Length: 355
Ligand SMILES: *Cc1c(COP(=O)(O)O)cnc(C)c1O
Image (cartoon, rainbow, N blue to C red; front, side):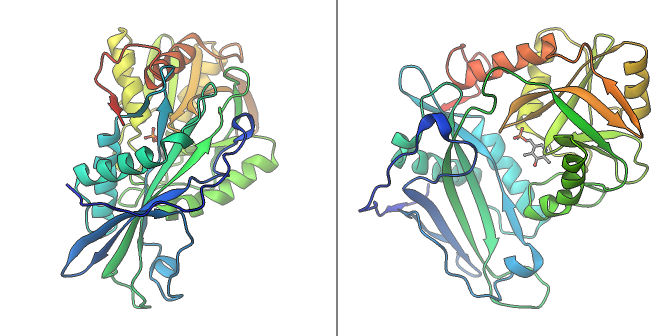
């Protein structure tokens, strides 16, 4: 149990208009912060008014990107309660990210306690307009002032919160995807399976290229042969071909998404066959599109929940997925997950944690 010292703001901010929140534009009144010092461990857990950080320009995070993060949401139910979705899964993944980056781990209970404490103090910031939420961003940065390459001897673990709008203004809207066969996102032995800022810096060039060509996201192929499908943008990716469902195995280059995990559990519960162990070649996806068996493609992640894919562009060729509209399974997953998250459906899987 963390002993969290609380300093409340003397200057509460005006809340933004719930109809125009967008994503990542506004921040709540408070932040959680906890320090790590070698020899002392994690200490001084506290909630303070939201404020800018003061760091030495030599702080190691700026030079060698020793940084971890998570993404999760707090949801407002119709009866006014506030709840989280599978927060212990985020805590476990954060610990795995820390191990890979040589950052001292934060006990899972402490991670969840920190997130809940911030949501609790900024409870009024959890919006209640349909499909809005309070996006939560826990992250850790290396703070030691030192230019040698080695793990830092001090860190700060911080949680900030941002009220965010409905991802889809009017129902699920299928997007056009560019299959990237030049840049790669992850390679075996690398950091593709963890959430760290460096992965995103490396993905920007591919994303920018796709946008210039008129596509909204990149479909990433494996980093060695550029042959197998891995992820779409910053989401996991699912394919429904002739009734069966495929998603890339989490074998080091694919981020183990909590939405991915929940979709697999729901799909199996509904009786679908889900293959999450064999890699799926892009050639087989294109073949399925050609012979009319590529029924649905969708991305999964906390921000968009489920993002239907209507078209794929690969090596000079445009393929339509299904009839180009949101598929039946895609829609059912979206309705079920958001139903559970917002408390409209019963939480039969034990995924909800009340704040
Ligand atoms: C965060 C993330 C996901 C989705 O994970 P969720 O736990 O479902 O939000 C997928 N791919 C990448 C690369 C990510 O960073």
